[in-house]
Each structure stands twice: as C-alpha cells, then as structure tokens.
Image 1 (cartoon, helix red, strand yellow):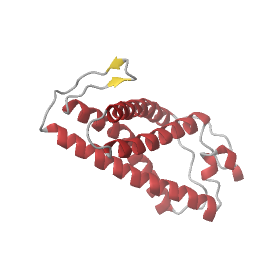
Image 2 (cartoon, rainbow, N blue to C red):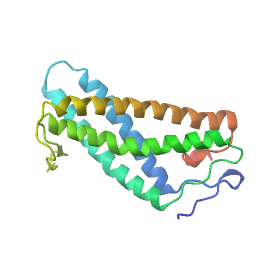
Image 3 (cartoon, one colour):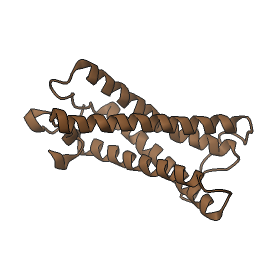
Length: 187
C-alpha cells in the first residue's frame, strides 16, 4: 500500500496522485452536472444544444476514464485513517459515502452512454473516436436509461453536498486537519 505524508499532529495525508484524481473528478462532475442542467433547459434541438450535448458526453467519458484510474489507485493505495477522535459512526458514514461515490462516478457515465445509444445517438469522443455501440436504439430502454442517468446524478449530487459539508465541518468545527489532507494549502 502507498505511503502517506504526515500532516498536522502526525496525521497521514492523501498522496498527490489521490488528490489530483479527486479534484479532476470533482471539477469534471461539477462541470458535467451544470452543463447537463443548462443544456436540457434549452428548448428545441438547436446547433448550440447539440454542441453542448457533445461536450457533456465528452466530459462524461473523461470522468469515467479518470474514475477508473482513481478506483485502481484507491484499490492499490490505502486511504489514510480518519482523524483521531472521530466518532465511529462518522467514520462508518464517511466510508459508506466514499464507497457510494466510487460506484456512482462509474455508473453515472455508463448510464449516460447507454441512454445516448438507446436514443440512437452514438458517442464520438472529442469528435474523433466513435465509441462502441453496445446496444441498438430502443424506445423501451431509452426512458429507463434516461431516468437512471438523471436520478443517479441527483443522488450523487446529494452525497457530494453532504461530503463537502462534512469536510467543512471538520475544518471549521472539529479543526482536525481532515480537509487539509485533500487541500494541501490548508495544512
């Protein structure tokens, strides 16, 4: 398992790779979610809307690739232990939230990809590489994947909000250095 740098009070920090992958995924999700909300609010099927859908798909594919790398990194490098004095229920809740986020950062792009295919629209990554067509267009599957993609996104957003709130609580109330392990300039 990977070595961790020592932080405040000898507390272990995340590696630079884990931090970089975390923030790439976080910013990617934030951008894709915002873009998804914006583009779906545009009435009709305009050239701008089509361009934004392409960008959204490109973000989704990129997030998926980085998420796979993040999951591999996490599987081969243990996360540092929770801050000393953290109640057991909070440690369990944090672990559960992290596991759900790992699952969602993989499943959300997959449901978007399958939704696009079920709608009969292939995904051409960065306008250069046509991704495999795993399923044919399907009026039956399209609403299922659309529903899954939308509601898994909202579920992920809710978990992210709780995750961020908990990190801020650790920084401002507990003052235990937890947030500084993921944001090095706070150390």
